[in-house]
Image 1: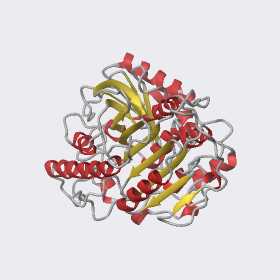
Image 2 (image 1 turned 30 degrees about the vertical axis):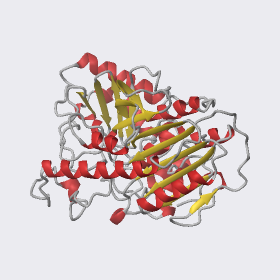
Image 3 (image 1 turned 90 degrees about the vertical axis):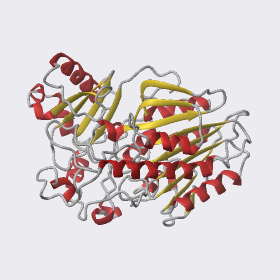
Image 4 (image 1 turned 30 degrees about the horizontal axis):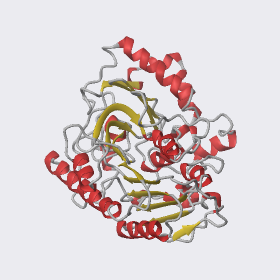
Length: 454
């Protein structure tokens, strides 16, 4: 993959990378340390135990958000969105970062599979205010493309190496306030490194299986799958606890704990009349973007919020804590003062919006499309696009979080309200910048090697 942004020197897998010529800015006294700890593939699951086990294992207490949403089911795109504080298309950014038998070489990634050089990140902004910044990831495909603005970056395969590097960096210099981001993934699929989560012998069968049950090579037992998921989540929480418990108290510290994305396990609902494949995060359904989120800090009592919030809210929240000015165009709001909703996400040829208790999914079925393709917007805004039922599905995700009952046809007034709101979002704060999609870039994007979406 291409060179790191802001002159970061990439010197190999597992290496700790330092940005040369980092300006030495004196921080104002009293600024807090800031920590973001994330895992991939852990959904916030009403009535289940995986997310609760994860949070409990970390030992962290604070304000829990029950309706927090990532901006993409892709861990790579979701993390890029959180670090820039912008919706994926507005960055603009793309990339599923396939691995295993579907891996693409670094030079096969499209031009948008990185954070643009001129896009501010939380790290680059806080460094202006005297913060020392570091990002540490484990088995996260394409992670070095997300290092923009960080003074130190370490991307390893093993969780143990990542956690050790993060602790070494944290304790090496305590004179400046610190921003540390730690992300634990498992590379090929968001299953939290659990060997008990079964897979299809050939991944492509996963997509054929809903069409003809004779093609499926596995029959998944719901109880065993959820049990394995819960064990994996608790393991991830214990790993994060091993870092959080050793950070010390040189200065006040704010810590954010969460997940970049969720996933489908054995559920089928959420996509009009098409059953969702098993064990996947490759479709934009509520459970693939609703994630656990908790923030802890000085004076924050244990509490629960059911307001709809987003991961783009992390940037302005932490900027405020650091006394920093949020860049213009960042749509998020302070998590402690955010009103209820809406939430927006995108992935491939799919756009999604939640307003109040309802969600609307738009899918125009453009094979191998990325959401930054202007063709997606053209179909969405075409009045005729509301006519084919298969383009949209609508659910009450408060009562029906697994999206088993499509109410698009039975509530036409609410459907039109949500569709209007989705168009306003897509053409407003979530719009792809006009000057980024040149004819040459669009051609390169559509001709890029791909397998499925993004």
